[in-house]
Image 1 (cartoon, rainbow, N blue to C red):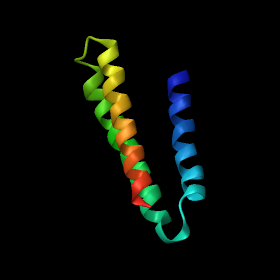
Image 2 (cartoon, helix red, strand yellow; image 1 turned 90 degrees about the vertical axis):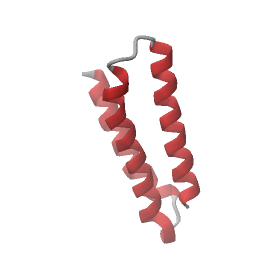
Image 3 (cartoon, helix red, strand yellow; image 1 turned 180 degrees about the vertical axis):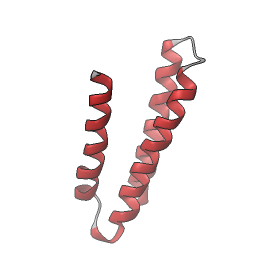
Image 4 (tube, rainbow, N blue to C red; image 1 turned 30 degrees about the horizontal axis):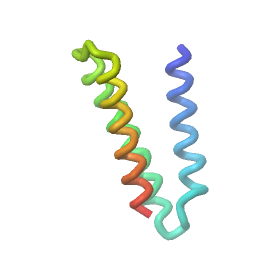
Length: 77
C-alpha cells in the first residue's frame, strides 16, 4: 500500500512541478515528455521485475530508465 501511495504522489509531482519548471513556450512538450517517460517506466517495470532474480540489477534497470526519461524531459525544453 505504501508503494501505491508513493507512485500516486510521484505522478502528482510530475504534473505540478512540470508546469513550474518549463517555460510557457515548451510547457506542453516538456510535461508530455516527462509523463511519457514515467508511463514507459511503469509499463516496463512489470515485465522487467518478474523474471529478474537479482535485486540490484532490477534497481539498476529502473534507475537507468528514470534517468533517461528525466534527461530527455530536460532537453525537451
